[in-house]
Image 1: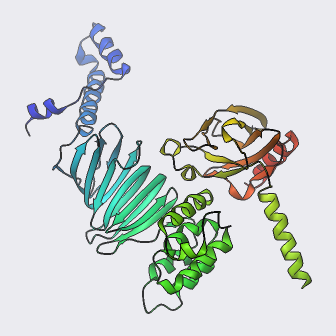
Image 2: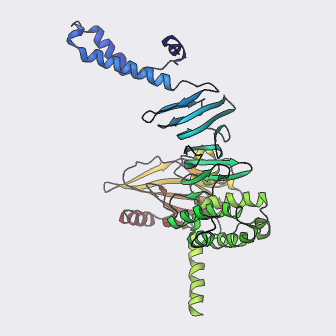
Image 3: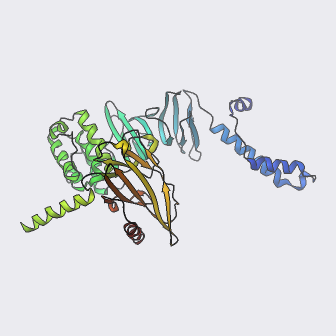
Length: 279
Length: 150
């Protein structure tokens, strides 16, 4: 892309008033420019900064790859609904850029998304599945092996892979694994023992039963983790998880033990909506 | 056996304090509203046991102490798309200690709550609920406790 093409792609950006004040002052100044070099230097730097902002906030086209090196970062505008900060050492592709669907593919690295829109307009594909924006702000990182971490700071993110879904609210995180999908979400202020046990879940050679540790360590707020766990543990362990949630917080009307243990979708949704008042 | 009975009684008392029967509030983090408009709210809340939530009268004020001076800020309570669910956004100064006093009526019933605010949002363990609006003394006591906890 030559300079002319770059200029053609630049959007119009309103200059800060301070720039015009500076330029007017310089024009009205009868003294030689050589005697006020700092003024011209300031104006040049300001104009270059504006050009840089304009260039990086330009809308990228579908199919385009964006790559940052170990020291650079950039910001990608997501239509009219938000922006994504692309951290150093990141490779990301614009898959779809349409008003009804904005989709990126994160090959590796880290992005920070700030989206203000109705749910399911912004998606990020990774090796472990797809992060679906439900109106949120979050950080998503993926290493070269596809191991990732989703951390949500505002709103909700749904992370999905082949029918498996993790719902991650603000203040919570979720590990993601290629060919396995999203892990079980946990609140960042959960005990370290609970987080470690989640890592060991499904690992045969654990010193202690990870499920036992999770159930023992869970606070009321950790019903986020338990609600997901109910749907992931073997059938024979579901009752242990159900009983722990029921012990921590009253089971709402409309949620029956029988239906919950059968993973009835409507029952689980109703329970999750009620539990969210504790999250 | 005696200890067990005392435990049950204490639990029932704590449950009643945490959530009085009848018209009352439930407080939650913004994610509870399931409404993306409120993702930046300070907190959300809903009314309980109000037959017609649309007719409930709800108001809120932020009560704070900034550099030793008592301040009060009237807050705008925003209704969510779900009936009976509301959000409060932070329009009080970042500096100082602040609690939000919620007041509501539903028919002849009234309710109140004090929501202490910390740097990471509402302080759930310090929530207080009443079957009437909180008094000035109760708000002052909550502010004092908030300041002392730092």
